Length: 262
Image (cartoon, rainbow, N blue to C red; front, top):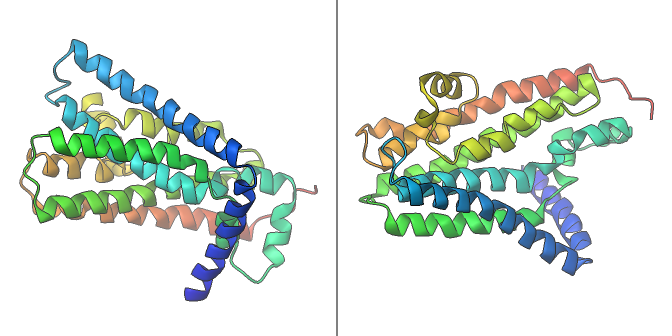
């Protein structure tokens, strides 16, 4: 494991050094990511200028929810971006070379892309998070702080699993399936509000099919004091199990992979 982490760090350093050769482009792209995400924040702000609450949630509570989901997605996108561009690796035949190398396929794909520009989006999420923490009516305890940490861990796992699932499907289609963006970028967008805002059916789907609710809605209820169930603290860890079927489909695709012929 230590050797693999060292190798992954070497991959990342190569990618970062390459990006640093174009510092102006990196800076402008990072700022662009910040500004694009800032539009979502403005949408929430103008909504609450007109309405004082959304289904019982205050402005600060929604900002807390939005910031956590954006942090989860941004962290996953920074390190798992290689899966999001995997269709190009399959089409070009690059995956053939990956298979004959001694290191694992997942490690090599992860190391092929490290999206440093997503730090702009992450920075905005951190700023909004600290503003929400300072203004929301929450009595912060060690349990609630732990809940936030586990939400980030579980959220990164779920979104990384979705990127892995997207890559696994490329073994069968060669092209990326755009509908997967509904589960990744779409989840980032509608995840800015607690999931019960969209109705019970959506909440059930987000609990059973893709466990968004385990990294957003249920632990958030505990943080906001709407439920007093300490078990909710650890629900984000249960969401990590979502990685298992995603990895299973990836292994299934690798075993049945045939060269694209490029």
